[in-house]
Structures are given as structure tokens and as C-alpha cells.
Length: 322
Image 1 (cartoon, rainbow, N blue to C red):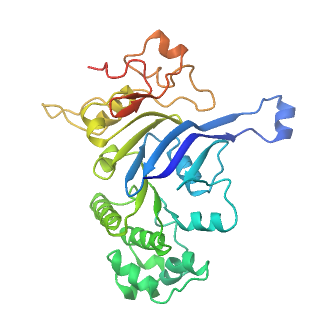
Image 2 (cartoon, one colour; image 1 turned 30 degrees about the horizontal axis):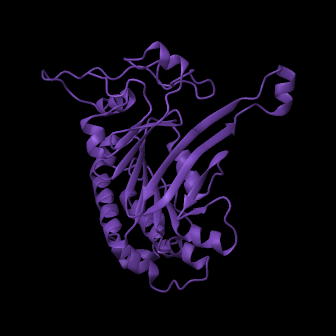
């Protein structure tokens, strides 16, 4: 069953200078397309991962899914209901089904509140019963019930992220959007938090939209992976298919981008090139200036996201890499 359906999602930001400055300096408006025509579905009780370099639009999509940003075009449907068109009791129901875990556990907790108040806030805001709730959730995420009376500064980064997970669970959500939830943590702590999230998924039947720039992290978490480049979805597949046989040259570059040594212990040359300016993107396929197998057609036409095998890919030369 499909829980989240995203259709033709687009988000454009106006990054122009103030009106008077533009008039004096005779400058045009500057529009940044952060997300462009993205479509994918998330099945209930599954993990869908979005990966890509910084600036690819991952976090913008996450914020639109939870309703923090409105799409310029396209729709986000949760359990068949358009998030932007819902109102009244319908929007209250949908909002309680969605929670978000942010990237920085040091910035996402109110330093003036005790942990008990932080965790129970989503329930208290709707007039629900919060007695003993924080203590119960703290124990479920591997902390002590006595920690409910402490302040955030008394915890380490990994412990704070566990508190964020407990807060997300408080309203009994169906979908949790995780925006790089482990990138600010040490590697050993990352593994603990990821294992916790995996266990909670099985226990509570959760659905995750997992946002990350690290393919190795999502390889073990995701049921399906979408690869973003400059705001567009360029490939989608299962982890096994993506890692064993990447169809898009950008996906192949991401997989090879992890630091590694060759057979003689020398560090392999990292991939070359940078993401183009999103305000003035290249014509055709946005990846063609960096692509080792680009042809003339790539700079003239934008490849559609087409079905290939069990996945989807937007590339005229999909699968032709050596």
C-alpha cells in the first residue's frame, strides 16, 4: 500500500536582491529551482532514501513532505490526501501522522525545556494524556526514565538524537522524515542510532523518508533509493540493483566517491567537477558537463525519467558505462 505519493514536485525560490537595489542596478530577478518535477512513491512500512550531493534538493523535498514548505508546483499526497488542500480535522489527522528528525541534535532541542516537556509537546498541543509518556519513550530509545527531568545540555550528541527520536514517536506517527539524522554524530554512534531506528521501524510499523548524502549509510537502511542531482531525480532502484549495476553515471560517481585505496595502497583519484550553478543550470541533462560518456544529445535534450528493469533512470546512455 502506498502511503506517500509525490507527483511532479517543484520548488522555486526567489533569491533576487531587494526591489530597489534591482531598479538602481538594473538587475533582473534571480530564481533558484531547488526541486524540479520530482515524482516517487513510498510504500507503507518501508524506507525510501533520497541521496545526492549538497544542493541537490534533498532537504527541500523533506520539508515539503512534512508541510514546512509549500510546493511551487506538484502535489504531496499522504494516504491519498493532498497535504496542501486538506483542511480542518483532515489536516490535523495528517499532521499527527508525520514527524521529522532533524540533522543537528544540538540545535533541534529547546535548551530551556526539560526533556519531559520536549518529548510530550506534540501530544500536549492536541490535549492528549502525557502522564508517564516521556519516561516510557525514553526507555524505548535506550535511555533512562530518570532522564526526563534533565535538560538537553546534560546529554551527548548521540543521546540527544535519541531524544529527538523519542519526540518523533510521541504522537504515534506513520511517517518519519529523517533529514541526515546521523551526519553530526561519530561513526560508532551513527551505527547505534541507525540500529535503533531500524528496530523501531519493525516494532511500530513505521515508514521512513531517509535523507542522506552518504550512500553507504542508506545501503543498509533503505528498501528503495532515489538519486537526486541539481533538483531532479536521475535514478531510482533497490539498494542491491543500485550498488551492483548503477545505470546513471552520476550514481556510479557517488558510489566511487567514498575514500578508498587501490591495490598498492595509494589513494584513488576522487571524482572531478562540481555541481553547476542552480540559478543558471546547463541545458539538456544537467550532469553532462561532468559526465565521462556525454554525447551531443545530452547537452541539447533533457532525458526523461524512464523505467529500466525494476528501476527508473534519466539518461540517454543508461548502463553503457565500463
